[in-house]
Amino acid sequence: MSLKASKRLGQHFLKNHLVLAQIANAIEKVQNKNRFRSITEIGPGLGALTDYLRPLAFDYCVMEKDQRFKQALSEYSPPLQILWGDTLEQKWDVCPKGMLVGNLPYNISPPILLKWLRYREHFPDAFFMIQKELGKRVMATPCTKAYGRISVMIQSVAYVELVAEVGPECFTPPPKVRSYMLHFRNNLHCVNLDLLEIILRNCFSQRRKILKNALEHFKKSFPSGYLESGLLSVGACMQNRPEELTVEQYIKFSEYIQKANL
Image 1 (tube, rainbow, N blue to C red):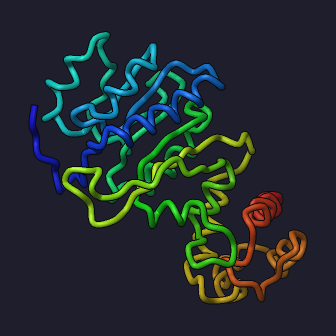
Image 2 (cartoon, rainbow, N blue to C red):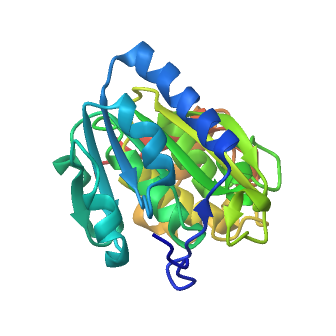
């Protein structure tokens, strides 16, 4: 079956068999360690990656929005569990507990990554193909230009490893940028992600400013001096810029704020 990729849905089909095999091998190695034999795939399309991964799984679930692929996905034996619709609106835990994979559309990659954080206990390991620029932000370290809100959110609860860097020629149609296949692994840390996200949104909303200015509105919800004391308790201060704090400092700062019970 030959179908054109949908520009509206941000589709770029992975076609390079060497890259597909490399991804499958990386996933199989993780499977052999954690003994999970269920795989859920986001956006399988015509099934290029599915063909490599289906033999590795007892249960295989796919989440697909594009109904044009109904025939191709219905021809697998044993059959796939198929969830039709927008993956951002679906409840992921209706799929078997195991591993999550996907060649993600660039335009919705960040919200999918953040949604995985909420489902990381159901899918302790995830393999995502994303835009290289986003991948660098995900893995960024403090005091670098790429370091920001999504860096801290993901690294607070997950280990991230680069599996492969993939060129545009490996896709059809070829994107204008290079891509990263990343392995995300739940680090088992208990973090209040909702609170951490609020803190990071305030801190990085004006990343060029020092925290004293970036948190000017946020600190009105707390007793005088409370945020200042919280930053000092984690080895930082209001004169720091947001990108200077480590992931661990942000986690401890959020734990300090949580104690306020406001």
